[in-house]
Image 1 (cartoon, rainbow, N blue to C red):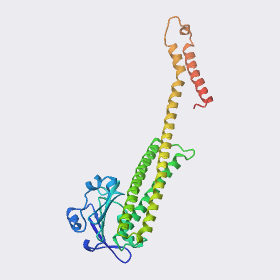
Image 2 (cartoon, rainbow, N blue to C red):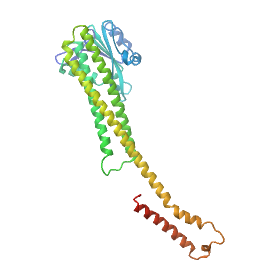
Image 3 (cartoon, rainbow, N blue to C red):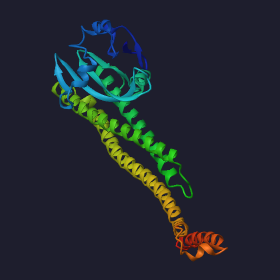
Image 4 (cartoon, one colour):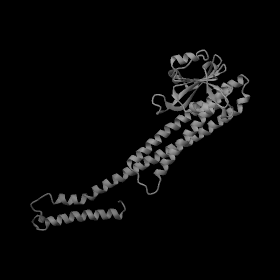
Length: 317
């Protein structure tokens, strides 16, 4: 799909590609890529974006600053699966062209509020920085959501006098795993975003255009660094939640094993008595006693009760 935007009174409105300051290509068809061919050197395919090494995602070509940033979003195949997909930003010749093959939320929310950001949306450079700000805000929301989910796990695990079923502990592990993946994606996205901002700033200085945007770039870089620190904190929280959940699972397993062991020991004395009197040797005096069988039953019951009482006294049960 192709979306073309031009500044209006307070936001970005749709227009034709030749009038647009920002052209957004979402999983473009060949016909849509042909429409922007006059404005950009080349429209990269998904394979092109995924094959680029992190160290080679920032370069200049034919007067364009070309930056590839990893942005959290949803897969366009099912609109459900969260992925961390590459987005190419092609900035130059009075236009910003973005190419993406998934659905990051900032690209849907930014046009309606583009005029409300600090720099506005009167130039492609301002639109690029506005998109970066929107992406940073989205990553902050994702990290806050991960923090809330981890809080739920730890509160439920450490709640006093609360028994946890195996299904609950398994769900907690799954949630911790999903949040770990989310935090890792956000940290990688922040890394690529910070490098892109630095590359963009250097490009502006080469063209003596850095001054109007310098304070905004510095502010965005500080936001990125703060979120990276928050991401490190959440990584530690994920490890804590995972270790705590595994610890609860081990405790539950140990309790089960202990009960089975105690039950096995509990029946050892009666089994020993039954084994002795089950040998049926001819000279066993108890075979001729009329009370031999009741005596054996009483001995087995008494041995089991004595063992049980000993375990209770030792607080093993």
